[in-house]
Image 1 (cartoon, one colour):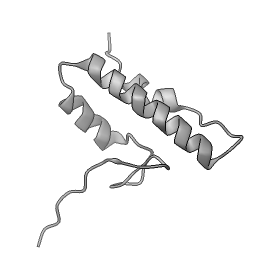
Image 2 (spheres, rainbow, N blue to C red; image 1 turned 90 degrees about the vertical axis):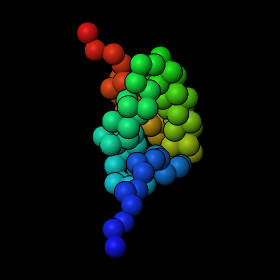
Image 3 (cartoon, one colour; image 1 turned 60 degrees about the horizontal axis):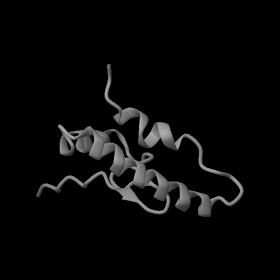
Image 4 (cartoon, rainbow, N blue to C red; image 1 turned 180 degrees about the vertical axis):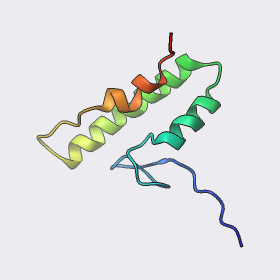
Length: 83
């Protein structure tokens, strides 16, 4: 019996990948998002910016007094068009 692959989606409010446990978006999630938004990088960046804002709020509640760092790199920088 084979198991279906688990989707690489965020586990809120920790923002870890439900499938692999890495900070979300993990590598697999990034690849999936690039495929899903192929040809519409602007929509991908808007979507990721909304999620980054949500993650910042939720992560800040989990660790009061310690603002989450590196969220721009984690959520947006990788998705910007190269070149």
